[in-house]
Structure formats: structure tokens, C-alpha cells
Image (tube, rainbow over all chains, first blue to last red; front, side, top):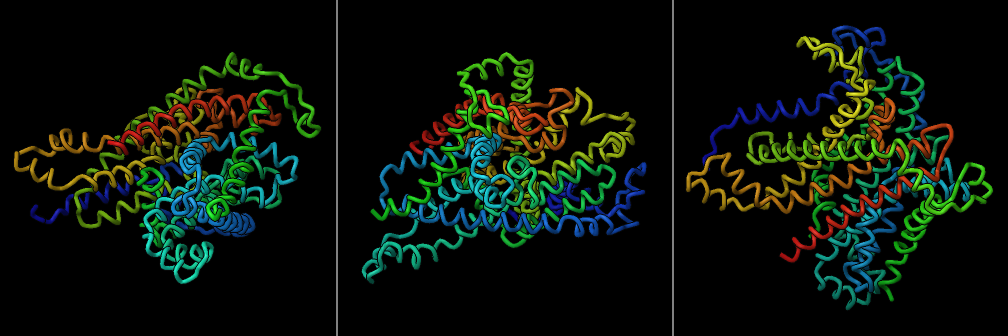
Length: 272
Length: 288
């Protein structure tokens, strides 16, 4: 194939991307629009007359919610890693009995609708007193990430050469030591991918937050935005400013770790 | 022995946080639970009558129809657009990597963010969509509040959300098709369109099957987009089974957990049916 300059393809690509990302642009645009211009006809396509009143409102009202979301995100990452990394090792390398059925259960687990899980958790948490607690949300959010994490770790760890494990054994390391000082370090990429998704799913969760933390004093940012919409339909600049702030982790992850994101999407769909 | 020890946390976790909630959910669906019965724990056993009530309810058939429409139309468009873009991005032009990366953004955003942005864009009086349509002489459309358009609106938003997933997976599928085949075809004088129909599409069939089935399973579960944009309304016109279940349990002042869990369990059955199909397709691909 000759490599002619394909500038028109680039132009077309930029056009498609712009079309696709228009809603994102519009969210940012509205977040800077003054309340009095919000219902202008025709709408302002660019915030020439920009204001930061929306962002000020967000930082005054939503800072606790942002902190709560961070806490839930990190908690969910920790729980997911602690459960799924050792399990992945057992499934990949330790000749666990019942591997086939465990893999099957994990696949089926990913198909269960969140709303069904939410009802089950509600019934359980009501008794335990876990409703409206951070711990309750961390546990519920982690259920989305744990099956994914186990499957991803299993797939990756199956590819670790047996010689590496044998060498550690000869040096006198027991299974736990081997796992900690050989397996985990070489699995760094998988750890990053799983953490990333566990964080993003917990940060973005709406169904569990709106069912298990409805009356909590500490609500995550997703629920903060939802309550904003319900109580305050005139100040869309504040709502959109909150939405922009809530999108920051996604944007950061995309810039810092795009290849891990793509790897995760594909790993979730196509097993090696 | 070590294997069991390493897998033990997962097994305990699955029993406590998957099996137990699911068991509780089944239990809810065969009792008559009210909030009071919830606290006191003395709900009456009613067998399958919640299921009978749900199936004979006036909402059941519309919800089933909406679920089918929402899922089928969303997936058809997501897949077609995703595939078109994947083929387009396969031409490694300048900036193609960066632009492809940017296409992931809608998928990474929290659903509340996308859903509320779409709500405002589709707002009847001040939304940008109506404003653009007006410039072309099309009158005001009540996207979210009219019975004819509410389901269309949530489907549009959902298509937008699903394109990145389809693009990423189909693109990776395209990467696995050997360039030699294309070279041979171009020597035989096959045009671009012919190449797509006779090479790309057939060779991509396994990846396509997986993409479509996974999309199906994900789309059946969707609650947030619809709930945030229309709460399933007006009336029941944009109520799917998942939204119906959510509304019964958590969406009104009076939670009705028993019918809600019955609806939820029916939804699980549908999802599992497609899940089994997915596993079957995947197995067959592994052996071939």
C-alpha cells in the first residue's frame, strides 16, 4: 500500500469525533452559561459571557459528595483487589478443584441486573443496619468489579511462565511468598486495569447509591447530581458544572491510561 | 491446600454478596412483603401469586414490548455505527489513534452525567436539539414528555452510550484479520465495498456474535439512563422490565418489594437465556 497523504480521512475523523463528543461539549458550555442566558433563543453556542457561578455552587455544596465518592471508589478498588488477585492466582496456577464451575458462576454473576442485586442488598442491609453507610456501598459496588477482576487476573496469570514459579520455589519461597514477590509484581498491568475499572464503576454508580444510600448523610456525587436535578431545575449551569466535575476521573484515566482502558474492555468481552 | 486458601475469600464473597442477595430476592418474591413486614420479619408466604399478579398486570405487556424495542433498536444502531467507525479507523490516518481514544469518552462518563446532559439537550423549550430542528423548519418536539417520543429519546441516548464499546471490540476484531487477505483481494481487483461484504464481514462474524450478545445482556439491565431521563414515563411508555422493577421497589413513596423482585427475577431468566446462548457461542468458537 502506498502512503499518500490522507488528509481528508483525518478531516472526516475529526468531524465524526466532534459529532460524537458534541454532548460533552454542550455540558461544558452550559456549565459556563449565566442563568439568565440559559433559556436564550437561539441558545449560546459558545459561553462568550462566561460565568463560574455554577462551579462556585458545586464547590460550596458538593465537596462532601465528591469526597464520599473518592472514599467509595478507593474502598471498592481495595476490596476488589484483595478478593480477586489471589483468586485469579488459584484459578490460573494452583490447580484449584472446580475451576470450570467457578468460571461459569463468575460469568453468570456478570449477567445479573443491578436492580435485582439492589433489592437483595436492601433486604440484607436493613437487618444489618448497613443502609446509608459507606461500607454498604463499597461492598455493593465491588460486586460489579470482582467477577471482572477474577476473570482478568486468571487470564493474565495463566500466561506467567511456570519456570518463574519453580525458580521461586527452589529459592525456598512458599506459595504466599511466591504470590507476593513474584506473581504480583509481574501482574502490574492487570492490577492497574482492574483498579481502574473498579474505581470508575464505583465512582459512576447510580443504582446502588439511589437505593442503598437514599437517606444517608454522606451521599456520593452521582446521587448529589440527581438530587440537584430534582430540587433545582432552573440552575442547569450548576447541574452541568457538577456533571463536569464528576467527569474528571474519567478524563484523567483516559489521558493517563488509555491503553489499559481499551485492554479492559476487550478482556471483558473476549477470553483468551 | 494452598489453592483453596487463595480462593477462599472469593468463595466466601460470592456466597455472602451474590448468592445471599439473590436468595433474599427470591424469598421476597414469594412472600407478601410490606415495609412493616420487612422490619418485623413476618411476611406471609404467598407462593407464586406475585408472579401471577405481575404477568397479568397492565404494565407487563407494554414493559415487555418496550424492553424488546429498547434492546433491539439500541443494539442494531450501536453495532452498525460501531462497525462503520471501526472499519473507518482501520485506515491508519494521521490522528486516528487519538480520535479513537476520544471516542471512549461517552462510555467512561458516569451515566448520571450523560443522562442529565441528554435531558437538557432534549428539553422541549430550551434544548439545543429543538433549536437546531427549528432552524430547519421543524416544529417543537416534546422529546421526553410526549408518549410518542419518550422511548425514542432514551433509545437515542443509549445508542450514543453504546457506540464506544462496539467500536473498541470490533476494532480489535479487525486487527486480527490478516492484511495478506486484503492484499490478495485487491490484486483480484475487489473494490472497497466488495472487500467489506466478502472478507471483513464474514471474518468478523465470531467477534460480532460476542459483541451483539454482550450488548444484549448489558442493555436488558439498563435502569439509570431511562430512570434519569423519563422515569419510565409518561405513563408506562418508556418503562422496561428493569425500570419497572426499580420503580416498584424504590421509585415511589410506597415500596412494593414483592412484585418488584418478581419482575426482577423474570428479568434474570431472560438475561440468563441469552447468557447461555453467549456461552454456547463462545465455546463453539474456542473449539473451532
